[in-house]
Image (cartoon, rainbow, N blue to C red):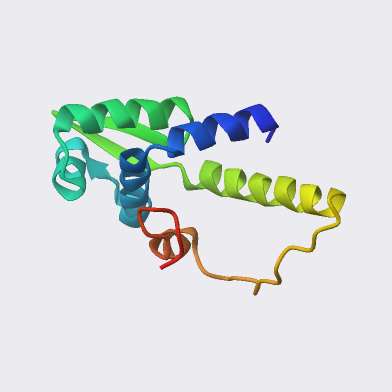
Length: 126
């Protein structure tokens, strides 16, 4: 993933509400959520949810599907995993250039959904 794409995704996810919507969709899994369900869960209006979903779709992080009168939204977890891996590779490359050792971390076998649940709305580990 090129740096421009990473920057665009970071810009989209920098909005706290948009990040909350994406987290909710990741937790929902393949089933996804309707705009109405997202509105109730994130506690914002349906029109605001729709606007945030449009940004997430444009960034490739969410897909939508119309089912009768409802719009079902699902997280694009493969794209999100690619983004996270690219961020990690880019940051580690910069650490090596700066001769700064990243803090050791355990190799995690946890799912993307579990890792996102560990992050609170401010982006700090809980």
